[in-house]
Length: 366
Image 1 (cartoon, one colour):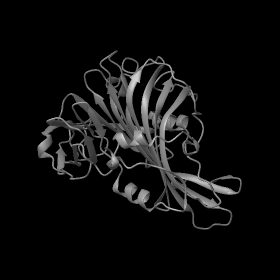
Image 2 (cartoon, rainbow, N blue to C red):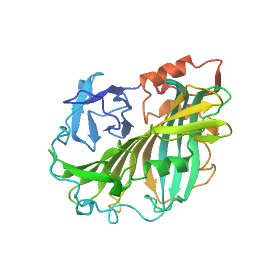
Image 3 (cartoon, one colour):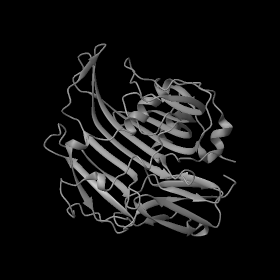
Image 4 (cartoon, rainbow, N blue to C red):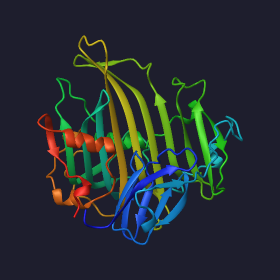
């Protein structure tokens, strides 16, 4: 790559574990760390800035990065046993939904990365950019009116056996990532914060919850009661199989992370980044040992706007079955979300067995 760029890894200063979803920006260039904590920022200015809702902000000189690790300090005390309230905690004292989120229609430019593993190995990888029109951000019923305009798409996928694993559509992705666990089925506790501007509210399944593993947290702005991060995880290993066309399947694990960010215009919080990890088991016919599928969906909002969209794709259709002309030049120049090392290996190894091969590595940028 002939142009200048900043490259490195972001990690927790205490645990030394990599941090995903860190916003990395400098001048007019912006990117996000991937699951490895890695970032790649094109044409940075003198200083590079790092921001994540659960960590203290940090700025470093571009020349000092040199592919080194950037450590961020957590805003919260990490010892699980430290709590300062019990299950009688009243969430209404801390969280204010009505005043902080848009309940009018708007559009957003987005980036979506979708991947699928079969028995631990990648079989599908796809990036989509486009525009999504919403009637409102947070769903209030089972219906979620959305309109989709696909702009750019790149993907690579390997041939599957007789059974095709269906991926979520755009509507399902949004419904799952914006779904909040049933509050009445959980106990809530306050986690002490080093930064008094925020409060972290953790939750765990109570006796009324059919899933004893269900847990998660909210990170809330103390000043206005806005949720800036929502996280939940459920292990559903005891869920019965459902049969369809002779194939039995069940979802065994769902993990959701959602970040919201306040816009200066209108002073409301909009979807910033979100991630869904879901694991499913599949039994075909007399198959005794299940095939394990792991699907991942990463959503990044690039910009919010009042502009109407030109609908050209279905929000219900399996995202991997969406088709759109491939623009190699666009993908050479973007660096919204770097590939993980495992993804890079998958792309390099895909060959004659592939069913789709439309992909440009970001490192080929001019």
